[in-house]
Amino acid sequence: MTEDRRRLQLLQSLREQGITDERVLEAIGNVPRDTFVEGPFAAQAYADQALPIACGQTISQPYIVALMTEALKVEPHCRVLEIGTGSGYQAAVLARLARRVFTIERYATLAESAAKRFAELGLTNITQRVGDGTLGMPEFAPFDRIMVTAAAKEVPRAYLDQMAPGSILVIPIEERPGQQSLWRIVRDERGFNYEHLLPVRFVPLVEGLPGEG
Image 1 (cartoon, rainbow, N blue to C red):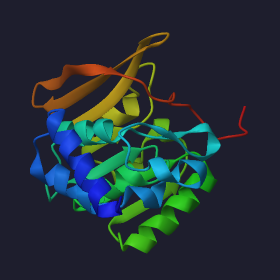
Image 2 (tube, rainbow, N blue to C red):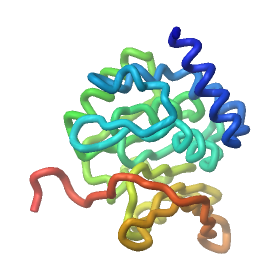
Image 3 (cartoon, one colour):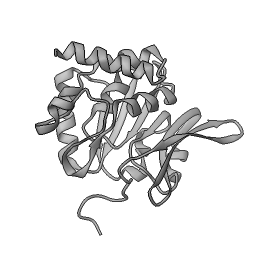
């Protein structure tokens, strides 16, 4: 089966699961997922499942990527912060929807690999950093949208502080051991409004950098 056929099948699967935002579907259709999956899992790049990547991390299931991106309601003018670059796949999807994407990753090896993929795909509107994702990227704040791709015990205050008025944060929260939920938080003139979306499973959001502590 050709890569184009696999992409079309993936998009059809996403539609059947309720993804309706055509801009999101177009962005996913235009990002070659096989670029972000290496080694023995490359043949499964377009399967609708999470796959292992380096440093004990994962590339999220395409449905979850689509659902979180749809929930974020990214508009062309948006400045988007992503916590957890990982393979770079989610950032690449966001980069096709937003004016600018800022992404932070605690593992330098993952960040370096993602940077090469961004260059290969000609994605020039992505700014990367290696650092502690729990702190956000205050030097570039405020942000119109924030997406977190690892599960936190609670919403870090730094994220709320870096949200612009009218902004949206999508984040998985570990509510109790073994139970995570995806939340959307909207900031308006009255404060922060929390909306539960669905159960999810993500790697944990870890404070600090590898080797610290």
